[in-house]
Amino acid sequence: MISVLFVDDNTDFLTQFRPVLEKTGEVRMETVASAKQAIEKLKSRSFDVIVCYEENAPVNGIEFVADMDGIGFLRYIRSMGNPTPVIIFHRKGDSRVTFEEVSNGAEIVVQRTGDLRSPGADLVTLIKQAALRKKAERDVKLEKDQLTAILSATPLGIFQMRNSVIEWINHPLAALLGAPESSIVGKPVRSLFKTDEEFMQVFRDLQIHRDVLGNGCAECELVRPGGSIIACTLQARLLDPLDAKKGGTVVVTDISDKKKMRDAIKESEAKYREMMQNTQSIIVRMDVQGVITYVNTYAAAFFDYAEADLVGKNIVGTITPEKNRGGHDLSMMANDLGFNAEGYAINVSENIRRNGDIVWIAWINKAIRDLQGHIVEVLCIGHDITDRKQTGEVRISTDTWKDQVVADTDVRQEVFDSVFHICTEISIEGREGKAVGTTFLIGDTKNVLAKSRQIMLNAFEGHQPDMRMVTNPDLNENIKEFAQLDGAFVISGDGFIEASGRYITVDSSKVTLPKGMGTRHNSVAAITSVTRAVGIVVSQSGGGITIFKNGQILKKISL
Image (cartoon, rainbow, N blue to C red):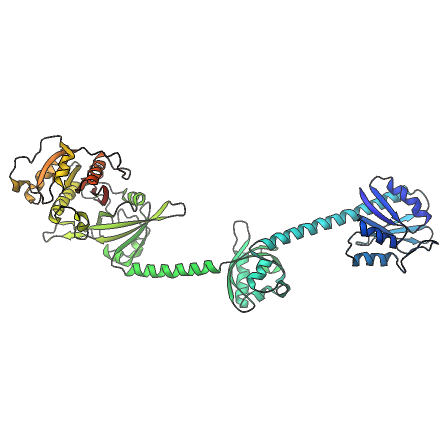
């Protein structure tokens, strides 16, 4: 139901017309006899539409506001902020009355004679159109006000532009620029930039670069009124994607802190790369499939390659042989490094130079993870530990790390060296073409023997002392032969072979080791956790050597 305030001019015609309108059931009318009465009525309530005379016919006994015709009445209520739609009617001689909606000039003409039902329906239509138009305007204004409130509440700066002129900005953008809104609105967008070239470049970027939602994107520097610079990103919903200057809505994000951090990271990375290029260490980065993503200059020179010849290639077949001398397949080495990065103090492996020379490298591996904690790359820092004897034999040097192994034990360095090199020969050569796995426990023999038992004949029992010293090179072949049998070798810190074929009786249920390590590794980890012995395990399945101390993996050597 549409409420109508009808300001009557007290003519017989309109008195007859009112019932016709009310009978339609769509209009509820309230009638007053003058503009003055209408003004008083509007002070206490509102109406959807006002219908008012253009000129008041003089009638005795009615009080009117001086000179208050329909146009004057309209001006007065508009001055009071009343937006109600107004339809003005005026008489066209004695035969016609014209109704005209003020806001858009729509009008109807009613004959004063004849059936009033048809013109009454026309007037109802005119009233409905005025009311609906006003409602639509209110809805649009409400939506605009709500949108403005939302845009002003967001922490992001926003402005609207048309034909390269700023038409509106929100409060956060004014605060970001450090200027009142009134000093920015109406200015050309160019005023936000230092130079014409930067302005043109940004508008080109907005037309070229798109985000996933299709908005134009650009990175730029905006200028505050005082001349200071703000690093920002712009996201623009353009009216014409091919011509940014036509206008659109632009979201401004302050990235000053992010840019400072990014610049600092770039500077840090530059220093980091310079350091890596100039260091005398072998530095290689690779993904979890073993594809090399970076090598420093020293690494490339060490392996006798150009840097470009290594990046993008797999380590297997370049700096790591596809098959080692013992025939073990090294194709899974990269995956092992990827999954176990940071799991071992040092990983020693047999590597190869471009000319085929074998070198032994001690690698320290550092996992590089993504935001979800998954390993995406491995940083490997290596040192050449190749021991090149005058005889031409190439073996692993323990000089740089054996101190760490024998510290706080009764194991002599030369004893550890002898046992370790026997282990490397077993790992590489096997026995009669077959892979061999075995265990050596060095030092703290009293406790080791107490926590183990004999499971087969001790092959060294009854021999002369000089034939039981592991440092005697004449024993190497015998040790490698007995390594095929079950059980561990127990060797004193000064090199005396106490026993072979020992079974470790320590509970290993509390030992936690990486996946892939079997019973032999778990047993050695367990006994070294309750004694001061050093344990060395040669893996039959992979040929690698693992050194244990204090229940932990101290080094893992891939051969």
